[in-house]
Structures are given as C-alpha cells and as structure tokens.
Length: 169
Length: 93
Ligand code: SF4
Image 1 (cartoon, each protein chain N blue to C red):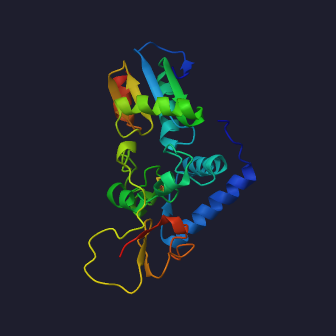
Image 2 (cartoon, helix red, strand yellow; image 1 turned 60 degrees about the horizontal axis):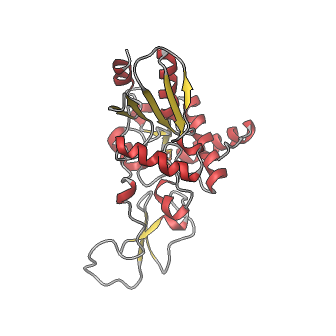
Image 3 (cartoon, helix red, strand yellow; image 1 turned 90 degrees about the horizontal axis):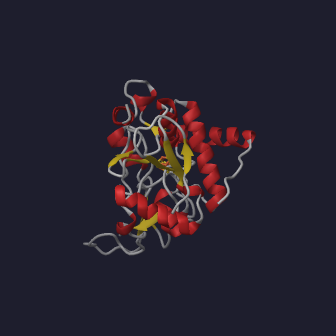
C-alpha cells in the first residue's frame, strides 16, 4: 500500500475543522499542536486509503462495517477520556490536561481483540421489558437516543453517520 | 517473513518495533529508539500488502494479544506495549 500525500493547506483546513467541532461539542484537542496535526494527517491518510477516517493509532481492515467502532471519533473516546484523560490516540484530551494540571500517559487498548469483536447490533441490546411503539436507536459515540423507524442519517449531537447507531430498545 | 527496516546502532539485543505510520505514539517510540541510538528493526504494518498485514498482525498478537501498536519486542521475550517511555529507557539502557 502506498502512503498518501496530504497537502499542507488541506491539512491546516482539516485541523481547523476538527478543532472547531471539538469546541462545539465541548471537547478539547491535545494542546501539543504538532502531535495533533500528525494525528489529523493520519486521519486524512486513512480517509484516502480506506474511504473513512479510521483511527490513526489502530490498524483498519479496510471494510467499513468491521471498522465502525474505530471511525474517528471512535466508540471508545468518551470512556477513555473519562478514565485516562485522553482518547487512545490522545487527539482528544480532558480539560485538566489542556490546562496542564495532568499529563497524558499510555492508554491501554479498549477495543476488543480481533477474535472477540462483535458487529453492531440491529436487534435490541438487552431484554426489553416494555413494548415500544417505535424502535429506539442509540448513537454509539455520544449516547444520543431517538425513537423513530430508522436512525437519523447524521447524529444531530456528534455528527457521526447513521451506521454508528445501534438498536437500543 | 515480513520485511523490516533495519536501523544501525548500539547492540542491546534484538529490538523489534511493530508500528503504524499514522500513529502518534508509534512516532514517539521510534524517536525514542533513535535518541537512545540502539540497533533495531521496525515495520509500519499499515503500509504492508494485505496478506503481509495478516501475517504481521498474527505475529504482533503472539506477543501482545490485543494486537495494538506500538508493540516493542526485545530479544523475542520482553514485550512493551504502548509508548511507555520510562520502561523503554530502562529496558534499553
Ligand atoms: S482514539 Fe478514537 S477519538 Fe481518538 S483519534 Fe483515535 S479514533 Fe479518534
């Protein structure tokens, strides 16, 4: 596989977009701008390579349905932010880290190993104790819930695509 | 056999780094190896051909069941997963 080339201007633009989305969503980017820029470049490289911005710090399969959980922002971002103060790549960090009150350490991989991965469920995730008139869908990235025939094309909260939703009820 | 890039340096045993070309922690690990000046081999698994990726992943999983990067293997036995700077420094000092 050949490495892709990302233009300087393109990269600057994408960094600005990622930063703007982060602020709008209440997230913080790693204040180490060189580090952050390299990760954004990695996202762009993966987008060219696979057709979607797979996590730069994980190996993508090239099949979107197998990589849904690691399309940035990944399913694991918020849990890692809470527990370790940073996402696995340390692109997103906590307020404490942005303010320099804490430093980022290595973050263990939360994604299950290949042999234990499940595909996103289109059936309700648990026992459903009540009957609902419409299916309830949950965004796996931000937890947004909505009751409608199918999930929205784009999550109105965190802007991820429809295939990041799972059936909740 | 997966082809690795060899970097000359001080002999501290067999040092092999499995990395991804897009990953920030892998880059930091690679820089640290350069700073320490140790002889090592590395491979960017994401840049390999599909069948080689499979082979490399199986190899990484043997040392590190989560199959994550960076995975640093010293003398086929000591495995350091992630950019654990202190641990790497101590192991290669
Ligand atoms: S760990 Fe998740 S949120 Fe962080 S850069 Fe990788 S995909 Fe994005």
